[in-house]
Length: 129
Image (cartoon, rainbow, N blue to C red):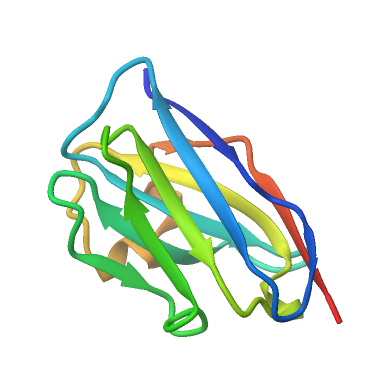
């Protein structure tokens, strides 16, 4: 059973930065599709970014975060980071780390949260003006 621990959420002002972390346990999965979804109150869960941990690339992003967010793999391959820069109030939400071991890791993964196998508990990001 894959367990995901996501962390790093906080309250920041618009224009600020945060880095979210997602760690897998009890093993390292060097060929997993790991990414982030977010959900704002009253809205559906939205795919943000995803990366293939085997090589660290390619990675895919939602159009709303391209150029501002960067997803990366840690050196141990059991941690994935989401660097979020130039944050906007519309980035506010509960951010969930998500993982799959056997699905194709491409842009379509971001549009199918119902197919994700493993979820973290979520970490809150709040961006104020």
